[in-house]
Image (cartoon, rainbow, N blue to C red; front, side):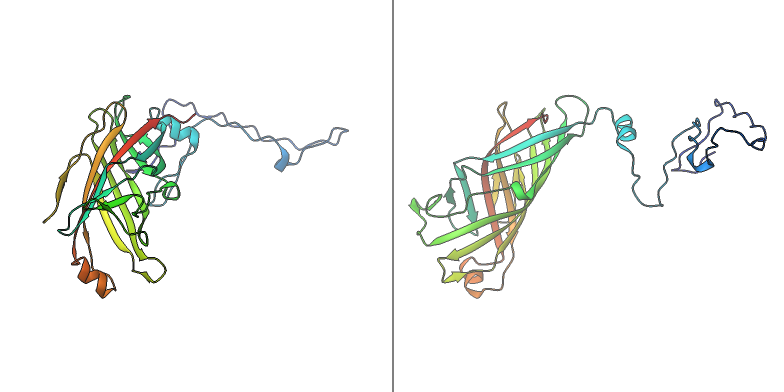
Length: 259
């Protein structure tokens, strides 16, 4: 009997192999004798033995993995941001933000059986792009940001779950926000770590509700995060750090099997 977690390498249904007769000594002849190292390997019956150290993950060959998970398939997921977004920090009024042109691609797998199961997705960080906040994309109290002011949004992680049956989306998002004024001032990055969700996201002073994905993949994602102080007295004072920020992000999510 195999120990717990082990793989049984024998079966009572398999017949034992007959014993081989003692090989006779080769006689000298004109035929060429193959050395033992070049003889074709014996084709033995039995189970494939896979070993691994305790506590480590088992590595399977593609054929074995395919047999173990016959319903698993890789999906191609695309994430696009649209206009009509909003960003807010502390108790200031929200910035109106046009995120049209933002994009990211990733790979997903179905966590449950069926065409409408929950998809686990992980986006490629190198493919993620979100337009910067600038005078061309952002306005505050109806006025565009000054042309010399810019906030670069540099994503570091995006991934989570997408329920195709209900339209619920929950994506863990981590990013740096880099504030600069021309070439004369550049603040240390602000770090934001939140979950962009189609449901409700709430903090102490900020709260918002998103919208679930419709039949065309369109949704509104909202996320509240705490922004910690940085090594910059001006930014800490101006933004009242630590504080909360909120993002309302209109997006379109497309899910398809790779060609």
